[in-house]
Length: 107
Ligand SMILES: [Zn+2]
Image 1 (cartoon, rainbow, N blue to C red):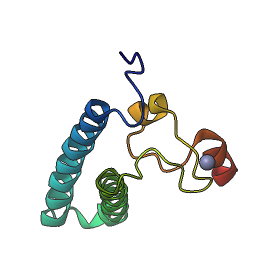
Image 2: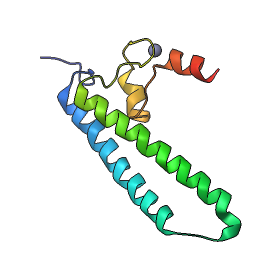
Image 3: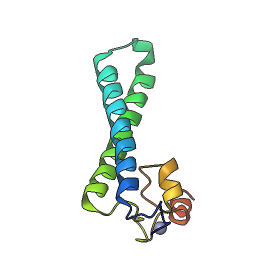
Image 4: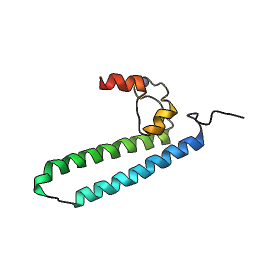
């Protein structure tokens, strides 16, 4: 019997990650609809545009993560092709890079 409950190939773990991503996707989509419908205060137009951009970027990241789950490449670093630790993916479900690559990317 496997004790590797959080193995990257664990279907139950993947299902959980997908559920988290799907929920977040729904929340962000609702937010985008709200932001699109709300013409807002003209004085806040920059803030509004910023929020729209952030929400769109979030949706894009979530869509990418869900696609990677469907393709079976979820949990692989997009840069070095190494495994991203499940602990990292539980904190940041849409993570595309392992920690070392993310640091390089930001630095
Ligand atoms: Zn990497």
